[in-house]
Image (cartoon, rainbow, N blue to C red):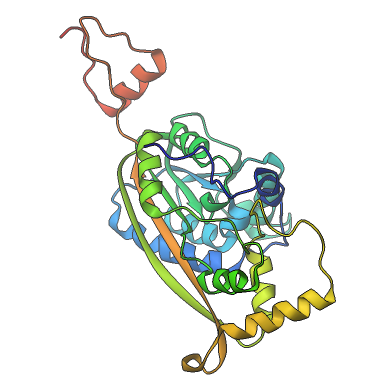
Length: 304
């Protein structure tokens, strides 16, 4: 059975609003940490891209982009998202001010997408779990890649915020976040989008906090509650005080009384294979498909 067109508990209007959000020049530290761990997985990939796409660098990791540029110093990089103004803003930050040396001597950056089928790598860190149309987004990434190009992505998994979700249930409150997709479903969606050889894995990261205030501040920097049944209006100081009391129930003696939250991080890697040609007495091949097959060295049949 195919996956639903969008996560059933995600509000697409709220997701679109959040996707335009930019906060300063620094990306969330958790996202940078996940990007660093995802870069470790590049050690097992032999292909050295000469053209690559960084999807959503504002949330995905501005520091991570610099590390990727250092790894692939000769490669051309494109900064892409669903919002062109974000691409230009990220480009301005990463290239630096006019008086900074990196603006004149650093690698050249492009905004937007490269010509279709020309990118050797598409990097998307901590993006998919907030997409209202993830299958369409995967197809967009697939079109951007060249044959044998690869996708690297990460996102939050369903066990994220488990402790906070349970506390909200006990209070009879709406969920604190929408439901996140399981890694096996992501693997199925990759295949449906045209990718091959998907490799999925996950890890759990446990974070601890001294105070409810610190915990809430970090959650705000990482995202918003996009659940369709979240609180519909503003809440006052009395509710905030109650929330902080609820958060204190997340304290664990084994962590020195610190508040504890779990995050499930899903990592994915997949290739764009050579296009399949329908087998018949006479096969018709489109011009774009023929170009990709010639670049990949695939044989073009004429008859069975």
